[in-house]
Length: 115
Image 1 (cartoon, rainbow, N blue to C red):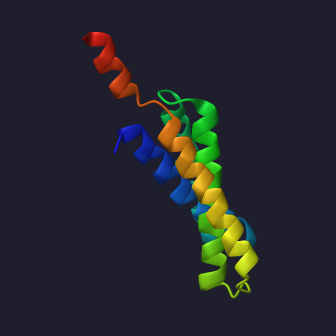
Image 2 (cartoon, rainbow, N blue to C red; image 1 turned 60 degrees about the vertical axis):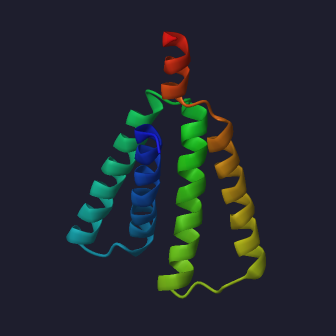
């Protein structure tokens, strides 16, 4: 996997933490953890956006973060499981995967240009 896409996935992983933190933070330490997660998440997304198309990076970042947040709320915070919600999240993930698959890889483009 391309290093830039790994940054996007890493950013989305931390997005889940800060979104949950916005709802569930209750003291200085949990708010500090939320702020750190925001910083890491956006820093990684911005770094990936320097080499990948920023629109695709943002769509993948938000899509994965949304899916992760919904699943975390169901698994850890007692959010009711609804089949329709899960099916819509899976549809969202299909779109995210599709965007990643149709986005050209910069390394492959450079190899073609060097030849």
